[in-house]
Image 1 (cartoon, rainbow over the protein chains, first blue to last red):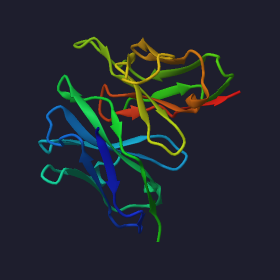
Image 2 (tube, rainbow over the protein chains, first blue to last red):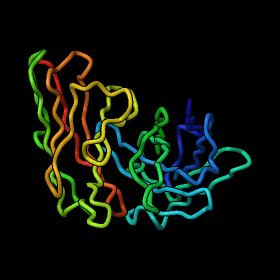
Image 3 (cartoon, rainbow over the protein chains, first blue to last red):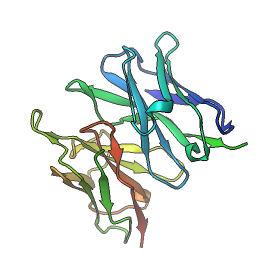
Image 4 (cartoon, helix red, strand yellow):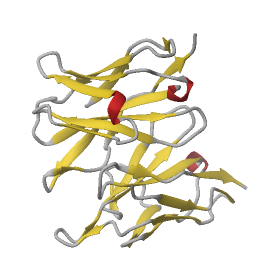
Length: 123
Length: 113
């Protein structure tokens, strides 16, 4: 049974870097059948894709966040990570990690999601 | 970016009645090479992560009750709950994965009348 677990600080100061990690259990993060991604949801609002990574390390980012986002994968430690720099209050959101099946050479839908973690940006 | 627009924003349906949610994309999400619609539906209950209901617009995820159905092609899609149950109270989202960035509709809140 696949499980995704997000960990990281729940409070980040403005202008600092938000760092989260997603630990994968019950599946291999090195699998060539899946991508791994981050999605966020501001309180009371909709869903925004942040970016995704393949086991090879190939990444894809939302253009709206690309200048501030880095996603990396550590296959030996079975986790992938998100770093979002220069945060503001607008980055306050529930952050999710998720798995995306790979099909026809591309990332598809989000089939498994972690429980969300609320990250608040405040001094 | 492909803009996904859902309608209505909310709806209240009596138990056992039909609920219908529409999703329109700003451009077609039907990929001619694969002849598949790159469209998914999710259910999000309060305090929980989204749960995948359908992918390829109409392929039901394992474990999803058959009172849920997904249909449509091109730019117009529908999620139908044939007989609303109390446990179906949630916000429902459509999402396109035809192009990067993948984008979601604004969500439709389903409540009991």
